[in-house]
Structure formats: C-alpha cells, structure tokens
Length: 105
Image (tube, rainbow, N blue to C red; front, side, top):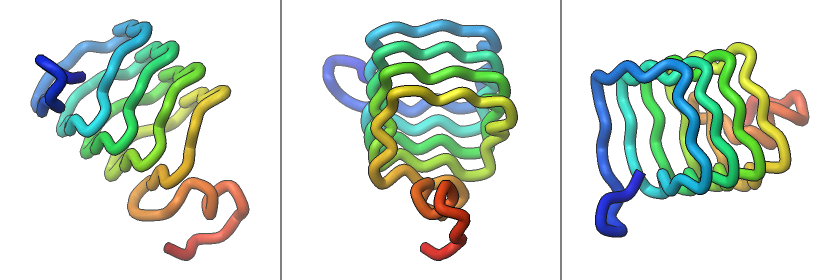
C-alpha cells in the first residue's frame, strides 16, 4: 500500500481473509504477514516485495504484478487471472520461466 503516494513497509501482521479493490501496493514491502485468503481486484503491486508470507488460497484479479517478487511465500491455491506478470519473480525465478517449465534466472 502507499501512504501519501509513497510505498510503505508492513511486517509481522495477520489479516487473513482481507479484501482489497483498486489498492496500490506498488513499491511496497511486506514481510512475515499472514494474508491467507486475500482477495485483490484491480490492484497494483508492481515492484512490490513479499517475503516469508502466507498468501495461500488468495486471488488476484485484473491486477498488475509486474516486477514484484515473492520470496519464501506460501502460494498454494493462489488464483491469478488477467494479471500483468511481466518481470514477476517467485523465489528468484521469473514466473514466465516457471510457466514454461524452465528454472533459469
């Protein structure tokens, strides 16, 4: 999320089942946050960093995840639809490589 147009940092929080529409996470960082069951519609997480988090059973719809990174994040059951995945990395691997079945960087 941004505050006054500037990226923010969130750590050691728990907000399972949260829902956001038209939210701006761009450039923000989150660490050790439980957002399992998160629902995001029309969100912007471009360039955001997510580390050691639980995003299991979450859904991202019509969202911008370009350049974001997910490191040590539980993504089991995540549903991503109509999203910009350009440059998105999961545990350091480009998601496009993961989708193609490659594991290069």
